[in-house]
Image (cartoon, rainbow, N blue to C red; front, side, top):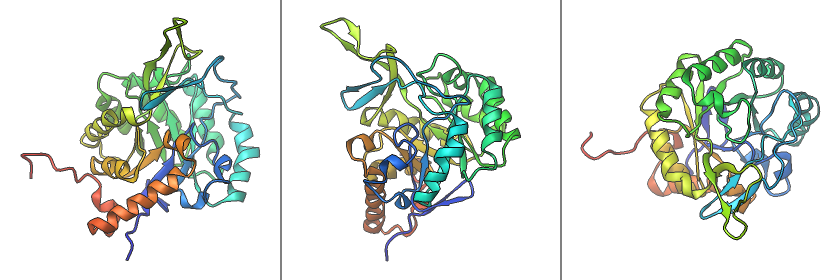
Amino acid sequence: MSANIAVNFCGVTMATPIIAASGTFGFGLEYAPYLDLDQVGAVSVKGLTREPRRGNAGVRIAETPAGILNCIGLENPGVEAFCTDILPQIHAASSIRVMANISGNTVADYAYMAERLNDEPVDFLEVNISCPNVKKGGMSFGVDPHAAAEVTRAVKDHTRLPVVVKLSPNVTDIRVIASAVEEAGADAVSLVNTFMGLAIDAKTRRPLLGNVTGGLSGPCVKPMALRLVWEVAQTVHIPICGLGGIMTGLDAIEFMMVGADCVSVGTATMRDPAACVKIAGEMAAWCDAEGVKDISEIVGTLRIPGEN
């Protein structure tokens, strides 16, 4: 008998532990020609803001050793267009679970979007307080525990949906931020967002990205992301979605071993548009080979030398 890889995250059942990461999977519809969307646990849609955004000028993505840098700048059509035009198309095409990723310049922006999405057919809200590629809002909320908590409370006060707060690795101690949003009422956390990075063209002595710096993702960040998920899992008592450099089923299994209840896959889809489905299949195969009947059995099972 094959292992059960369905998971329950914040009271929502997903067919697999894989969430397609925000900003890497569009609104899901773009990937329909390459995979069966119903075989993906959920999609965290392109980051939404209150008003439409054009994003950053200049080059927005650059390859680096074992990863990529991006500075898209939250280009999106705005929350209203998402609700009226895009969301109906998603549900017409599949039954995939939908996580709406929201970002704002002010606390009021987050509250507005939470209320606007509250009665829409959305399964979760992912509160992005950790985007490093915008000049206002974004990561500025995610590096201060008081600001992070304020945003979390505002969103919780304006929605009945599960609230997942996305954390930044670009902080001194991520556990302080995680504890702050948990205390403020977050139903779960997702971590980590991209690491701040810089790449240059030595011939021109100019940065490769138009925004100068960008968010680093891909296999190169996995060891750091694993460590941060492990630390947070020992600190909070709410569910965790782990992400950062997951390219294979074994990568995803490792994130669950350090305490993630589900995982998010991003950069891998740039190499293979069907990565979310393939990684889930590799997770199931690993469970079968190891005699694991239910994928949730492995959550938090990392064995530390010297501990029982």
